[in-house]
Amino acid sequence: MALQALVASQHCCAVCALRLRGCQEVASYQQVLGSSGDENANESCGLCLGLLRAWQEPLRALLSEEPKLEGEYLLSIDLPVVGVLREQILLALAEEEATVVELKDLLQWLAQEELGSRGFVQAKEPLKADVFTIHATGDYSGSGTEILQSLQTPRSGTSRPSKKRRREEPPATLTASAATKALSGLSKDELKTKLGLGDLSEGLQRPSTSATLRLQICREGFFIRGRYLKLSRRLPQSPWVIEGERKGDGSVEEDITTPVAKYFGASEVRFHAEGREDIDVRMLGPGRPFVLEVKNARHLSIKLAEVQSAVNAAGDRVEISELRECQAKDMACLQRDAENHRKRYLAVCWSEKCLSRKDVEQLNQRGPFEVQQKTPVRVLHRRALATRPRTVYALKMEVINQHYFKLQVCAQAGMYIKEFVHGDLGRTKPSMRSFLQGQVEILQLDVEGVEEEDAEK
Ligand SMILES: [Zn+2]
Image 1 (cartoon, rainbow, N blue to C red):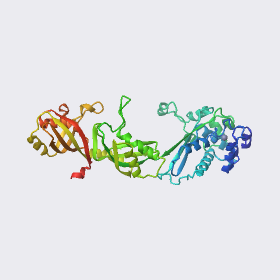
Image 2 (cartoon, helix red, strand yellow; image 1 turned 135 degrees about the horizontal axis):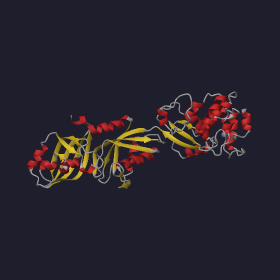
Image 3 (cartoon, protein in one colour; image 1 turned 90 degrees about the vertical axis):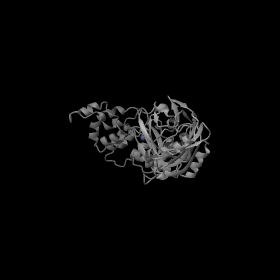
C-alpha cells in the first residue's frame, strides 16, 4: 500500500499525515497540533500511538515546574517497543518514498522549538557539568503488543536451544533498542515474514489506546566537601530508625542535606562522613570531614559561601565550614582516611576510687600503647563479634576533684572511647577501669579533632 493510501485509510493522525509527506517546517506541525480542526485528534494514531499529541503539554508543564532550571540540555527519547515496531513497518513501507520524517526526529524538533523559545540551548558536549538531560519514556500497553511475541520466540531449526537458553525462560521483555536492532534495514517482505503479517499495514491498525509519556530531568551529580560540628548531645549522625520506626528529631545528615537540596533544587543529596560519633557526643574542634553528592540539581550558580550560610542559618545544632568542590574519588578517600586518621577526645569521667596524685602522674606518663577491644555489648546487635586492636597515642588526665576528672585521649580512628573508659565488662583491655583499679564511668564526651595521620609525626 502506498503511503498516501495509508493516510487516506485513516490509520494516522493529522500530524503523522504531515510527516508522511516529508514536511520539514516545525511551524506547520505546531499549527496542526494547535488547531482543533483535526477530527481524529481524540483517537489514537496507528503510527505515533498518540505520542505526538502527548508531547508538548507534559513538556511545557515540566518546564513550568522548573523555574530555576539552568544549563544546556540533551534530549533522550525512548519510544515504547510497539512504537518502534510500527515505525519500522512505516519505514519499510516508505522504502521508495524516503521523505518521511521519523517520529523520533519530529519529537526532537518539537522539543527543540519549545526549549529554544525558553532560552535553552542544546548541549554540544554532553559531559559538561552543567548539562541536564530530559528523559522521555513512552509507555504503551494497548493492542499490538502480542505481535512482539513473534520477535521474542527463538527461531526454530537454526540452532539447538542451549541449556543456557532454556534456563532463561521466560524470555526477557523485549527492549526498544533490541527491537530496532532486530528490525531495521529489513525489506518489506522480510519484515512481513518476521512479524507473521499477511500485509504490513495490518501492523499499523489504529490502536485501542494511546501511549503515555513520562518526562524526567536528570543531571550528573557533583560533589562538595567540608567539615561539620555537632553541638548537640541529642542528635544522631544519620536518621535514627528502629524496626522501621523513626526515633528522635532530625540528624546531622538531615540538618545538612535538607538546606543543601533546597539551595540547589536537587532531587537528592547524599551524605558521606569520615566515621561517626554517638548521639550524645558532640563533634567540636575543626569538625569532622564529609562529602556531599548533589544529584539532579536545577540551580547551578554555585556560591559555596551561600550554601554554607544556608545550612548554618537553618538551625543551631550543626555548623559546617571549609566547603569546596571535589571529585567522586574524594568520597572513597573518606572511608580510607577514617581508618588512618587519629582523633582527639575530651571526656568527663567519674571514679569510684579517690584519685591520687600518683594515679594522675602514672597515667599521664603512659606513651603510646595498644588496646584490645572486643565488639562492644551496645553495638553487638549490628556488628560482628571481633577483637580489634587500636592504638592510644596519648592520655592526659586532669583532676576536677577527688572523684571527677577530665580525660584527653588521642587515639586511632575507630576506637570505642566509652568502652576504653569503663572497660565494657572486661571486653576492652586495658581500660581506665583497669588503670585506676576501680569502677569508672564516662559522663560526657566530645570529639575535639580529626587529624591526618602525619599531623603529629
Ligand atoms: Zn500520529
